[in-house]
Length: 261
Length: 288
Image (cartoon, rainbow over all chains, first blue to last red; front, side, top):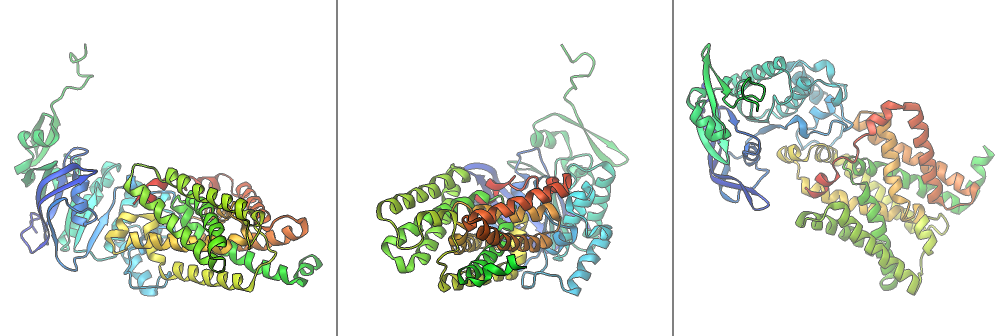
């Protein structure tokens, strides 16, 4: 799997503009999701990363351009942890079960549904937490729970909004490997991140966004000072360490000797 | 035992007991969604709004006042949603303007033209006197409708309450389920108005659900507990109303409030922590 997307097309945005309250957030964006793709959408806060995800999810209508999705496409979505009401009375099991097929009318889970929920939870290593309230989980466990909810629908495409925001380095590492495994199993993955060194540089394909698409390609293609400056509006130096690109902010720290008046 | 059996000798009390229990159950059940969606103020506003429709229909179509008041409530709910979505007016302000204006209209109509149905005071605070078989049938019908709605649309209701964005992606028609919830809420308020009263019905939407939330972290158990607590408040409230000789609605609410204090004292910090943030996202959910 290359991760850059050469398989059949699943979602296509063509020349799309998106806005909130008549304020343009994305302009002339063309973006394709292929069956074997693993893409990170990078950009600063307010660049339109989540808006791009919402267009892919079709929860936001474009004001110009077209959005096409393969008919019957199964899409899984993992929201930002910050957007969740953690006081909601719900256990891990109830949360995952929520995404079962809508044709079933009975509120309780059938034995086969129970088995499927536990199979997904076990795969993600949180099977023993099924009866816990969602607030009692750590950041990494919460992320895994929402992944489990998305995976229960056996999606062809998995979209994640800042999946490593607010988690520690070890958890970030685990999540990245988990996503790589899912991609190996044949799932297309698109995630947003503003974490260049922790996430973006380890992904096979990146799209840099700042109101429009500024650059697209492998980390070697787009993690350059020029593309990053156009994306983030700040000078950045790019170093290479053990074949991995690392980004260093060139702006001096206020505590660097000689920079404070 | 004598205390329990003696009032049952009266037909009006038997009817009142049925209506109060069903009212408590139905408001407890639907109240879970109202509280978790941060819509408690909508419940309060709708009860007042329906009062306006109730008074107006007494004048123009007394035979069909229940249908008219129900439609009035549903239209008010849709108007609140529409005003909130289309303008920069917040949901609480929209509720304040639309529903309280409707209530004021009801008060004016009552004052000017009087009523052929329940008295002004009974409409405000609830009464078990004069409950008709038709009202009981109506309440049973609304109870069956509400229970069926919650049972058959369990996943969609839970998903759209917890996470409307992901629900929409997962095949839930969030707009339709929210509109249906508003309709069921309007009908539940209308059906329970006679026994609980306009000013107190919102309390019974909130109290059982909040107590249930303090007792459990599971959504399924919260639904069951809230329904049972609502029923219990209805039953005990009816008996205390009979013996204290005060309006039924006030005693039902006071029993609920007393139970809240007991549960709060028993569960302490864990109960408070569970019920924290129940209304933290009301505007988001109302305006979606």
